[in-house]
Image (cartoon, rainbow over all chains, first blue to last red; front, side, top):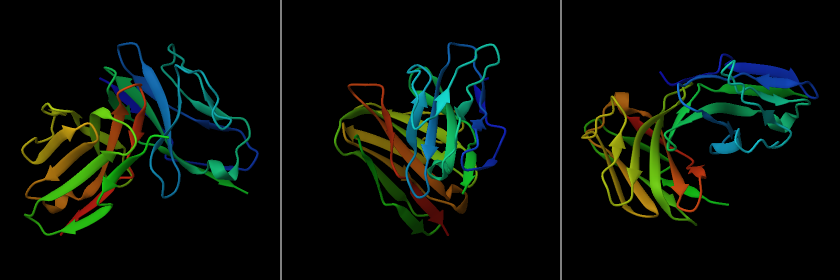
Length: 108
Length: 115
């Protein structure tokens, strides 16, 4: 079955602390994974995709096929990073399967 | 950047009535649009994929006669919730994929409340 698991509903850290938002997936094919972010009162937007291997706003995510994980990391959290983060798996190019999301709170 | 709009942003209706939600790609053409549903504190669940000029493809468990989707142009898709009931109350989000690339852009969502 295709599934995305985000085990943490809420992650609270202080500004400057490292952040890791966990994401595990279940998919028999070749996975294409994404992280989406939703800031307060804003729409969902793409943060990064594993294919691009890029760092956006200081965030990185590495696909680990052995552990079927795609954890999102940032070495030093900022207050403006506070948002809802969704991990998503793309199936058959079009279909996106979302995890339940993790709310990141960064305290000053 | 690419923008997707939804109208209305929120709607309250009586049980038994039908509600239409519009999804528009404002500055790009989208052959494919997607409709999601999100219950409080839950994830987005794909309801259906609509391709311009053809019938929508519904996910398992989604009633196509209840959730009518029309994608008549490259910039507009509509979702009509027919004979709405309180259990249809939810947040409905559309996304659009541009013709030229892999980008999927999300609308701001429509909150439907059925009394």
